[in-house]
Image (tube, rainbow, N blue to C red; front, side, top):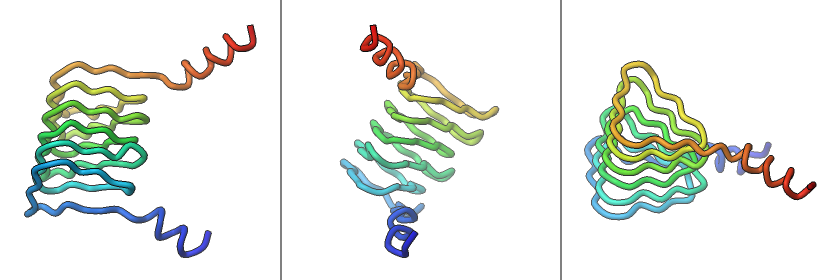
Length: 128
């Protein structure tokens, strides 16, 4: 792997603890939030990490979502949602896979979507 590939893989934007954002965030890189965000977050091909000091009041769409802090809003994590023991999630959660640590607080509808099963079903239907 050359240096350019390493930098691309390791690039993560950070919203610091003292930062407050109101509006829409769209990105083409991983994002860590430790501050306050209100609005909408779109990272469909990347990872979003909500830090332990963060409060996010937003609808979220990302590939992978890891929550250590507070989220109020609907969350779509296409591949995986990881809700850690210090986390609080209030809103609908839709994900491919879900991990919830003991101590985490969740309030809302949870829906998991197994993409591998639907892909296997489509292949079986095609073969028939």
